[in-house]
Length: 394
Image 1 (tube, rainbow, N blue to C red):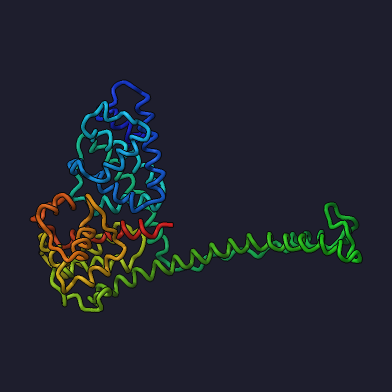
Image 2: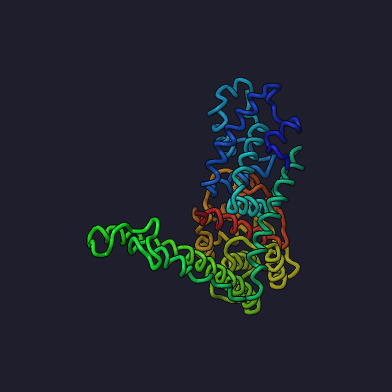
């Protein structure tokens, strides 16, 4: 990825139509900064923007483009005087630049990565392909490394070292200063100037001094103890996740619906296997989890490819609708380009059937596309992850 960001990268690739006016680049940077400030705190919007950015062929009436162009007009009010039609490359440059800046937090990075993984089949880049893929690859490596550290770093359960008790000698000294003007060895600098016999004047000095000394002494110990307990909880959670995944695969029992795997057809089984896996392992996951899910699905649905239109139609069937809507409770419905699950939720909630025309524009994949069941489950899993992380982020 270009060190100076996507705006400079697009400019270097001669994709930024701003002429020789350097001030225009700074103006577009202002628009990018304003957008990224918003996206850092609105991760569902970051997910939506990322999905739109991944496809160079996305329709020009995409709502995300309206929002990005509006941000540009805030700082470049005459842009349409120079560009009579929507300046797609300028909008995409600002869009990618804002995404890059918003992805500088752990939650932001994970959101972008999982959207990209869920939309990999509709990722179509133009001349900017190299810089986009370089950015996404680096981000994926970062998110994977953090997830691996949490999962594999706690592979053996060992009690963390508890912190040492508060420094009793230092605390005793501070309490002695609170008690009075003299200690065992005579007057002490900085001590309470009142003797206990002074009653109220002494207590006014003693109370705050003693309280502060005790609070400061035990505060550091409490923080260290809390960190140790968090580490222990993380270790236990890591082992529990792995144990639950093994039990789930061996039991062949759908946790979401409380029914056996083989009670469902291939389409709904693919969907609910991904839902189960996402529920068992909240938060960011290492790449090994993707391979594990694919293995489980391949075992349950061997040598099966699923036509996308059949998959969506099965999930929107009235027999499955209540369970599907419940499983997609945290998936937002939006206009413009959306993921497979957002499209399914929209259709299911409205009681509508999918159409070939809307497949291509809304999802970015043709309705007739057939996808191997393990890959389709992975796409569903990562879309669920992107929404989970975006909606649960503080």
